[in-house]
Structure formats: C-alpha cells, structure tokens
Length: 335
Image 1 (cartoon, one colour):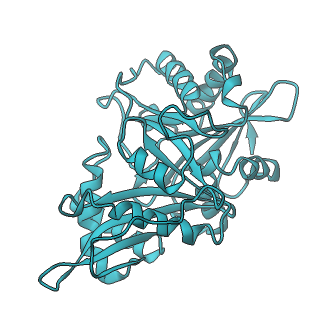
Image 2 (cartoon, one colour):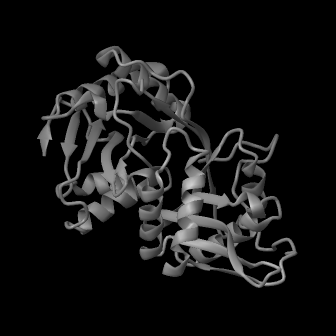
C-alpha cells in the first residue's frame, strides 16, 4: 500500500485492508461490479496470477471516510472497464462535489507505475460519477469521450419480498430449466456470441465465445431453458448467466433467447426460476437493464423494482452509464 495523494490510496490483489472490505460489503448491491471479483482475486492467488488487479480508494478530506472505490482489473476474457462505486446517495453526487475526487482518481491512475492511458477504454458507474470522471479524464489525457454511451442502464434489484413467484403458463410440452452441463457448451457458445452482437463494441469471436461458455459451465454460472422440438431433438431456447456473487447479493449478468424461440415468455420463466434459486442463499438479486430495453417489462413482471412506467422512485434503483473513449486511442477490453 502506498499513498498517492493525501486522499487516494492504491491496493493490489493481496493488500486490500479491512476498512475497504467493510465499505464494499456495506454497499454490496451497488458494489457488485467490484466486490465479487475482488474477493475471488484475494482468496485465489492462482487466479490470473500475472494479471492487472488494482483498486484506488478516495477518502474524504480530513477524515478516514471512504467516498469512492475505483477498480482497474481484468478477467479471463480481457481487461474490464474502470468501475467506480460511490458511497454517498446519488442525490448528493453533484458536479461540484465530484470534480476534485474524480480529478484525483485520474491523476492517481496516470501516476501509477507502468500505467498506459490507452488502458482506459471506458468507465462505468452511476451517471453523475461516470460523467464527471469521463470529463476529467478527457481533460487530462486529451483522449476524447465517445458521444453515444456504450451502456445507458437502470440498476435494479429483486428480493424474496418482491419476487413474483407465479409464472405464466407455458406452451412448451417438454422443457427443463436447469444448470448447464458440458454437453451444452457448443450451443451456449453460439448464444454468447449472438448476445455480444447486441453489446457493441464488446463483441466476441467464436473462439472467445467458446471459452466464455466453457468457463460459465465449469463455474456453474449459467442456466438453460431446454426445449424439445417437434422432431424430438432438444435445443436451448434461453440462457441466464450469474457471474458476480457475494455473500448477500448475486447479479444476473446475461439473459438471452435465440431468435427462433423468442417472444414466448421463456426468458421470463428462466429468470424467475434462477431468482428463486438464488434467493435461497442471497438477500438480493441485482441486474442492469438498458434504459430503453423492452426487457424492462420482463424484469418488472418477475419482481425487479423501479421499472414500471410512472411508478414511484425506489431507493437503490439508479441510472448507470458507461462512457467509452476514442477507439483509435485506446485498447478495448471485454466485460
């Protein structure tokens, strides 16, 4: 551990202190983009041993209170965006309050030994934090922000109290909703590749999609909706991936239905089943959904909060934004 400025500290894979862990766990839902990965890196020294795993922590002036945690990390498929978790309520995150912390975090990154500014291909956080960081980074590095956000999303959650357990009737005669097995790998790989075609610019090659499918299956992180065709052959209609779990919170990170099987309520039934299973061992299920994605109505029917049109504001439901930087100047990762 070393102080970079009076209020920013950096930590690596084995030296995250207890007060930082406590802050992440006290904010486990909002911190789901950081906490599960940090725990995996910390508890498994053999996980990507030579990879980049860095966390910056900004503490408020004259106090030890943590205001922001930034992660600059990577996973099996590549480097992640910068993730930033604030601890203050979103209403308090004004442009005036954010300017200095974001500039300090930017400078801390740029002062990191061997750090290359091309590493920062995007940043993801609650909307005001993302905008403030992106502006500061652009000013300091002269790498332009991309005008259209990569991801404009609503962060939402479901609990045992909000889960709608009753599912609509199925038209499928023979189905099985289950964890994927190795024999599903080829079909899941195709679906992973198709899914990334909707998540530009983070597309996967067939080889990368095959690697992702194998990892998801090996780590028991992907569920399938198996359906029998009229010919008697089976197919996978939908998948749901759950790749970020801490003690109290799990995140649904991928939901996809092949076009052949779409618009019959299959994804909704599988999401509901996965939520029922996860809520046996977790307090909350969280996910991000595009602000203009029609899947919002699906998640609303399952019991995720704050997605209904004209409904009241729900504590914890937030607007998140991923802003990218000029792709001619950066090196894309994947998440």
